[in-house]
Image (cartoon, rainbow, N blue to C red; front, side):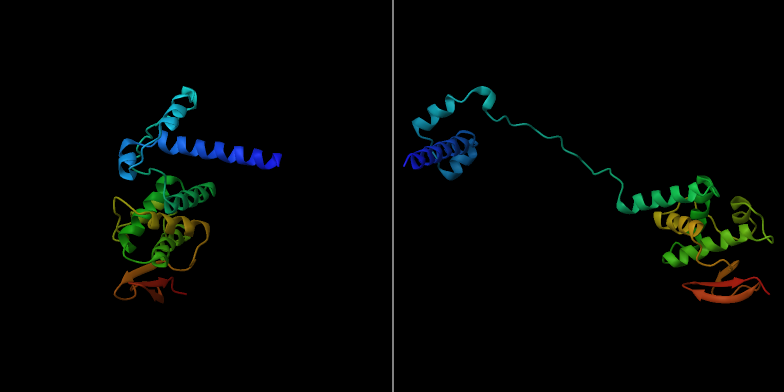
Length: 197
């Protein structure tokens, strides 16, 4: 019996506490909307609550825009770091290759972009061409270069630095195979060729 009395007392305190919370801290607009009028007893109970226990309203800062990098940007950054850690090409060279990829294959899918990066990398590795990125991409009438690139272009370059798709292709054109080299295959808008055997 004593336990029931304690439980009833706790429940009544809980009910009073909930009433105080709802009625005492409800905005005037909410009280008008619900047409709730606190009782005199409720008002007295609210007034007896110590000031430090009352809930204060705080304004949170408004964040205009989420400035965190997107998933794609984080992946591109990780690939760029991985490619750089291989200590083969610096950031300038990687960006230069990405600009060529954008100029030559900006409208192609990821594989099409990667194959253009392969042509650049394969030429650097070939004794038939200069052995630096800048010299290869700046050879007369060989590549177009834009002043910008996208994350997809950068990913294509860094992917190929880490794991090359095709180690043989050295030439490409749109419309038909290049006069120089052995025709290999067409992918997307490009016709790729290897060196003649």
